[in-house]
Length: 224
Image: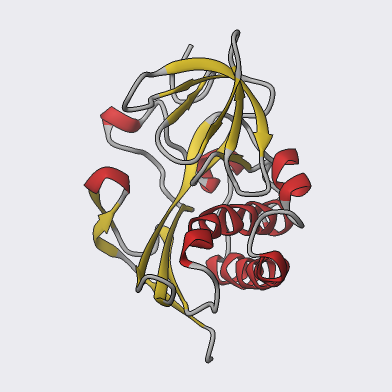
């Protein structure tokens, strides 16, 4: 396909997360997909594809698995406050031209347990729903949802057409968040995303727009 390719692997031996974390995943347990895109867009707008992917994945899981998946900005999906899916976007680009964008997506499907250090913050579709799934059905639904969301995104090269749907599935919405800004961490109330994909955070003194970085949500992943 001239605009995109999806690669699915059965197991993961050197998965890479944000800030260089790595992990292994045995065969038959999860869904590991790599989406390769070559969009004709401004490289400055490419980071929003993480949000497009998160929305598409959440829609697919809600439709096929009937699980209340929510988005934790910018790149996790949670069910009942625990992480079930993560994604990572990397780009190769010139000043005004994108060579390619690679989006990695990992979904915990049939995991029955997790290492002690993440057992309180991670879960799987099996643990949340109590039964197993056909992973191919989830992958097919993801492709359908991504294609639809991607087409909307390409019209404006931003989240304008997806913003309302994204905010409706945003677990951060109307909740206290802690933003680990390198210059100065702060806390406030998340009010959704802008059409540029920034997280709107109202603090006691001002409204801030967070474009990237670590954001902890009160009541999620042990932030109480």
